[in-house]
Amino acid sequence: MLSKHIAKRFKGHNVAMNPFCGAGGNAIQLAMKYEKVIAIDIDPNKLEFAKKNAEIYGVRDKINFIMGNFFAIANDLKKYKPEVIVTSTPWGEPSYKNHKTYSLEKNMCSEYDGGGRTIFELAQSIAPNVTLHIPKSTVRNELFKLGKYFNNNIEIQNNFINGKLDSITTFLVDSIT
Image (cartoon, one colour):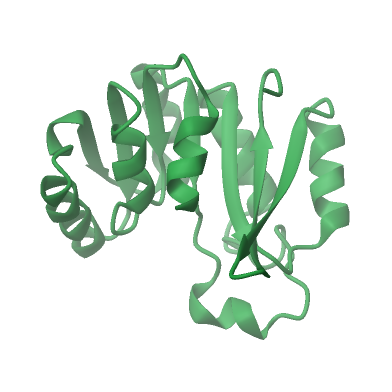
């Protein structure tokens, strides 16, 4: 449901990208709304699941699956000219639930300097509209700092499931819609 909402959020665009695609949930929803989707993951097993899931949903022909590390291939991805990047980055496996507060810089993709901020920077260098799905315990001050870093064009959405806060989605857009 959340993937469907995010896919509908950006109207009038043709090409979307989904780094860290995992089993393909976001990529599939994007393919239902966009002409072309670029889906990337470092894990070949997850990519195979994503391809099979895309076939089941009838959108396999709209998705270009790429195996690779987003951090390493980000510059090469510019050639696809995506207008929107939607991602639910690795939160740190199930251990993210052990953090009372979740830090984008310290907990998300911590092996890369800047973590979550680096993901935003790389994604924005590829496309003007970036959506990042993150844990509900993410430190809000880090999100506000990101907003200032990106000219205050960041929107923070709380996602509720069955009346309980489940997660957060941040929208970094060239113009908030």
